[in-house]
Length: 286
Image (cartoon, rainbow, N blue to C red; front, side):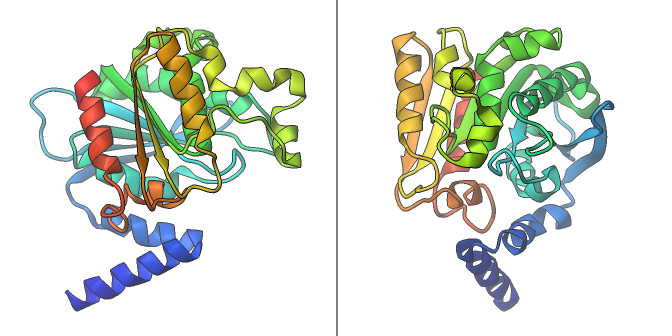
């Protein structure tokens, strides 16, 4: 127990201190040691761009295929890797979900909307193949943190992305976003380059695609988030309510941009009930 407390203290320190690689290593430790998860890794879903995904499923036998969550990591559309987010899969598989974490191309190699195209291609692949891994293709949710939440939200709301893959938007049954920048206007030079020119900004703002037929949406945000403004949640929520859609919002006190994702790990589960809220939401709408 003393060793565990030391490890937890170390993990909390590096997470809080912004040492991302060490923090992710500590957060992922239980996932690497877990024996109740079956992991299928490095599965290519886009040969042309050499993009792969990892699938995590409960190791114990299920009475029926499990609901599926496709999770997209954040990183300002220019960093991150699926291998760093096993802790998300570990948390959700413990709740009975099959979890898919795909990679996507990033800036500066590509610009918008290439990474959203990649995300849609991953959804289409999952729909066609997840039954082979114990997942139920009729119960697929998409989720993400930060830039990943933005990407997932566009796939869930703008039908053109899945149409290009020969699929209908209605194969996505739910969306959950953690600290997503859904409605912002680029101001920093790199973001202007990623999403510009300004005449195209409307194409990357999620509220513009809300039509009342998008899947139910859960919007989670930290009250102390200084990276992504909470106005993004308010603007998206307002658009959904105006069109008569299903939206639920949770704002967690004392939680910032990093810890809203960290709340899905063993290091930060006590900071916000994000995992409980996501589990309840997914189970209620799928």
